[in-house]
Image (cartoon, rainbow, N blue to C red; front, side, top):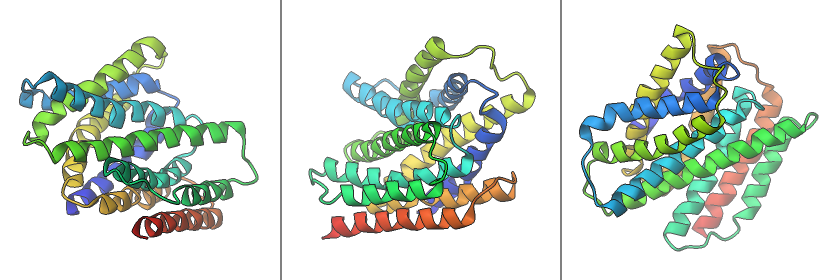
Amino acid sequence: MGLLWLITVLWAFSFSLIGVYLAGQVDAYIAVASRMALALLIFLPFWRPLPWRQALTLMATGAVEIGIMYLFLYKSYQYLSVAELLLFTIFTPLYVSLFADLFARRWPRQFWAPALLAVAGAAVIRWTDLSEQYWHGFALIQAANACFAFGQVWYRHQSQRSALTHRARFAWFFLGALVVTLAAMLALADWQKWPATHLQQGVLLWLGVVASGLGYLGWSYGSTRVSAQQLAVMNNMLIPAGILVNVFIWNGQADWPRLALGSACMVAALWLCRRSQSS
């Protein structure tokens, strides 16, 4: 659990770094592909040949959990503030719990009740300004949440049946993520928004090597050392940490009363989800 807390603190800075220095300035597809390439580089020394089924499974896990997830995440910065984006990741534990039950062949009863309550909490945050762009960003974040949750549970499931070291797995893991993000970059990138300044390049270097490479290695290893319920809860710890970093270091704005009320609805949704699973 301590390792998951450490990675949570590390990742708390990533959202603001992206929002302040990259979003709207560096093309999202270029930024994501660059991060995946940098992360892959640090694991190449640990690469080893694997049976094709195992290799493809690890590549698919990385493609979904990180590659596709980041494509949705970066796109959402066009529609949401950092605080809103962080808040809406509160849905991730619901998805973690859902996928954990499905992998265990248990159908989660009463799942839609807490999910709908969580959506109501999201609406409270900006009830007077529910624009089309707002809901577009909200949908993108939910797609990112689902991809991240599915990848975490799938990785844990694979780890229970494999003696391969995590370092060796991640060479294939990030290769899968790079394939997806590189294809998206070549097809969709705006090449006029290349990371031209040293600051942007430095932020991408940090995000690629530390936040993505070392961060996801630590998080994935830590996820195999805790229960699915603990993993679901830890997915939410990033929200207050990230919002506090954005507000107190980068002078971000937060409507505290609405944030509190919306968060209360979402916490109630998580409580209902856990209660329905234990019944």
